[in-house]
Image (tube, rainbow, N blue to C red; front, side):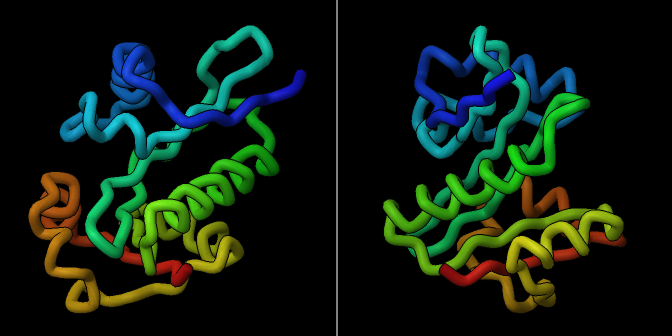
Length: 148
């Protein structure tokens, strides 16, 4: 079955919030203004199978809310990331960052071109983010950077 990746629209807000909630992720900061920074992975009948979002700052993006339904191909996750890089380029960003507490995910992110950075290397704008403030309180949080 062919998958489609597209940019989310305001009409997708409720479906996306429900999808993230079912996956146990928070939806803080997901609203009519930020929905334009989310990508949706859908199957041919329009069923949501995955998402990747970004909190946008002037020159930087903070990736968030990567969720894919069981059974999605790794190829589709790579394409989600590739599309997010294109979106960040369109928006004039210099770097993308992500935070994770899952060290098993490091090889995947490194394969994608991310490099580990220390907390002190995060842009100061990120400290406005509820997501980052939460992640900073998790002892085993790791931060990664992808330069565009």
